[in-house]
Image (cartoon, rainbow, N blue to C red; front, side):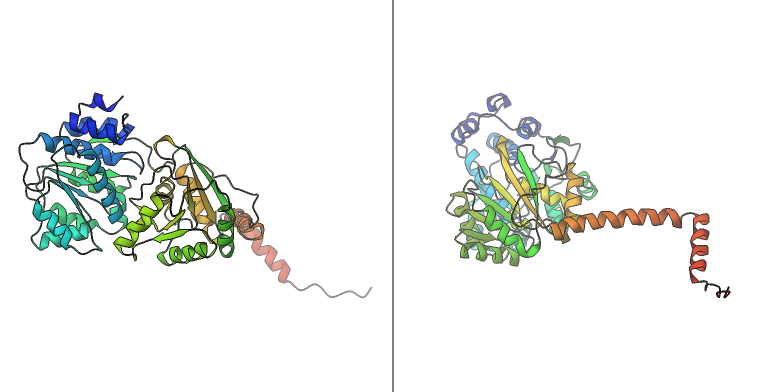
Length: 425
């Protein structure tokens, strides 16, 4: 199938052609016809599947064909500033030959330019929850005439504690509307939220929940914590690793690792919530144009990072939430291209690795040949854990039987009994 077969208007087809897109992704092929009919949609899709275009294109088309041009007609609610900017760039691309106007608002920057854009008038508002509620409370935003509501990255919204903000937003928008709900995973709390805001939705699920893309080559290196930096520098000697996104668990860890790499002549920048919006955007632009080879990010900051042909993702620290692993490595191997996902695993992270492998349904191959292999640490810790587990099973069998319990008590009594005196014969 090609985009021309989806009943799209000429201005959008022209924009898609200039962007270089001719063939829709599976989620676009399934979602666009549903949304053009005005139905609610429940989309379960990982990052990198093309879901932004899946909802942006039909919204632009329906607004272009609508008689009502004044006021905010579509609201896209997203968890992070980076993701909001990325969605804004998509609207720039697809709506360039239409009269549909949009703007992006988010916190961490002065609000005046955003307020000025709102005053000039927009039909599509892309927003993070905090700034949206703030400007609405100040009277700069009215959502009473809203026709389309998109809740993007719903699972991450809940992870970041936005559930109360979402409920506040729902009270500000009309009950009669078209609602689009997207989430990479569908745990029970997400399903409950979806059921509360959707009306007879069509469900589109293009990838099994919490599965990894086949085009991503995954591997794990067992290495102790104090040697992770040395292993990373060793791997980065390989010039074929042209562009790499590295994940750390903390903001401090991201900054510290960036300093280590730069000190060793590897151009790297860190991106996280403590950085100013300008600094984050500058670091992201440098990474996209390849002037920065390594970008180090925390999980929340990484949402919205969309880099064409990203060759490698490295989990410098494994995430303690298994689903996060899927989100992380989904930054590479996009649009059918090959990608490489490398994970470092120290002793304290073995439980995380086990949970991740259980979730994705496969055992990640272990790289056993490298200078920092932790045979005395991680591997022995793993063997010890299995040994303890087997002993626990054995003890449980003995404790569960009354006869065996009697046997062990008698044996203990015999051991404590003093031996008889020698007869002297």
